[in-house]
Amino acid sequence: MFTIAIHGGAGLSTPEDLGPQRETQARLDLERSLQAAGVILANGGTALDAVVAAVKVMEDSEMFNAGRGSVLASDGNCYMDASIMDGATENAGALCGSSVVQNPIEAAAKVMTDTPYVMLVGDRLTQFAQEQGLSCQEPEWFKTTYRKEQLVDAQKNNTIMLDHEKAEAGRKKDNCKGTVGAVALDQHGNLAAATSTGGLCNKDPGRVGDSALIGAGTYAKNSTCAVSATGHGELFIRANVAGRMSAMIEFGHKTLEDAAHTLIFNELPEDIGGLISVDREGNVSLPFNTGGMFRGWMSEDNIPHVKVWKGE
Amino acid sequence: MFTIAIHGGAGLSTPEDLGPQRETQARLDLERSLQAAGVILANGGTALDAVVAAVKVMEDSEMFNAGRGSVLASDGNCYMDASIMDGATENAGALCGSSVVQNPIEAAAKVMTDTPYVMLVGDRLTQFAQEQGLSCQEPEWFKTTYRKEQLVDAQKNNTIMLDHEKAEAGRKKDNCKGTVGAVALDQHGNLAAATSTGGLCNKDPGRVGDSALIGAGTYAKNSTCAVSATGHGELFIRANVAGRMSAMIEFGHKTLEDAAHTLIFNELPEDIGGLISVDREGNVSLPFNTGGMFRGWMSEDNIPHVKVWKGE
Image (cartoon, rainbow over all chains, first blue to last red; front, side, top):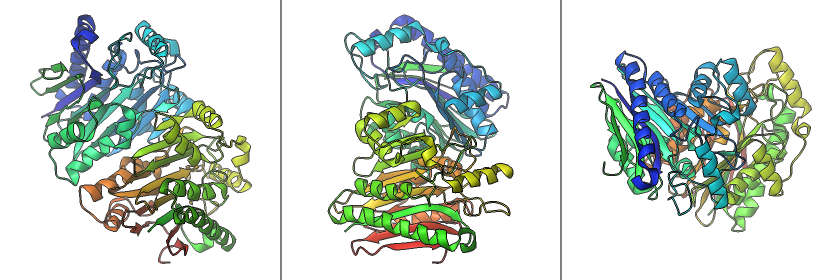
């Protein structure tokens, strides 16, 4: 038995806002992400390798707010956050504010496996990634035309585009795709979770969101669940969402679905975000309280399920 | 009713290692910290203001690893982490890697109250602190002779001095005082928690520890507890200690003391660290699994209780 579940961000409002062309491309990329992880899991690979592979596909796609195609901060640069956790060992890796590492999730994984630390930031993160032989790019490489236009728009309207914000007249309307993430159960019964993001369009360059923080945007523990969240990061940090979901199962004896739904539908404000989760029995829960969330899952039948809208 | 509890770090081994002169000074500074918070609480001030005042005294003391007197990273500079949380609103503020803000806990509080974010890092944090009129100092100002000698020692022995590490021959033996922190209950029934640190002696300059992370080193929620942790930060992040303690009370229906003791004595490895905690009933629990923890508490009788060693 194995399972992979992914998200490409919550906060979409309507199909009209997204546009048919971008929707088609996003669905294809989500399917590719599931398949990249599925091959690993089908061949007996680890949940950890699977979530890295799934997230890398979404980081490399310009459709999602992570890696290339990340939103731009107020100074016109990309500052990326990422984190990863291994449910088997409960080891973890994280980073924030990266501007040059091509695949931040790979750097987070290296922080976990190749340092005595959980989190690295700043110039030292860049240096570490280079020492580890990870691909780095000039800051300009990450900045797509689409994101540049979005920043101009945001600055014209003097707004910080939060993942959860509804599109308003005059703005690029599908600004809200937020974070990407993956959770997996492998054939060895181990869980893993990974999250990666460019954060908020027009954000302060020094802002760190929940995607960088173990216990907020990412958590994994074999005995409870693996979780990756997406949405208004500050609220997810304050509510300690990913750690809280694990604790709801451990101490509150909730099922995976009950814990995930309680968090997203009863505790967090409406139109804020969502999460993806998986447990050791292969249960999957992917709730969101926004108009849509790019999401997908796949099990050992190798049939990728990709959805975007509410009620779909 | 009000209560303040503080710590100045866990990881001490024996009175001989610390030395009588440093012990006397540390006890005096802990008492001053309790009194600074006590005056605020006795006059009807907020738990939030009280924990900031308590932590500031310890940041300003050279005896503790926070603010002036922070340990030095491998490049010879101080990189300070801090975080704060308001149990009434569940709002929070945090920062990491600060090298110039005189009182990092004040900057964390300003991030909470004066930005839409929870966490700020890097140059933008410095700029923000300056805009807010907070005192900043040249990086050299933070570096005491004692810490410089400690770094030389650590580099000679090629060690990263973790809070939990036992002193070994040839090293400065009281290197392990770690983090400082405070938790409080005010007369309005509100809780708050704050943590501040210089991290690990000879650490990687990019390393971020649990003291910077809401849910790891710091958490506060009126309905459960306020917590500040000290110890081997990576383990505290992975176990989501502060958020987990709150969840143990909320979902596991444990008492404050039961939750705190379970974490420190049953779940975390021996000789790793400790925490301080308070709840809305004014209960206080300050467990640690090291040889000592600088700690203290005070209630409305205004009698400061200061302890250092195990069994004291």
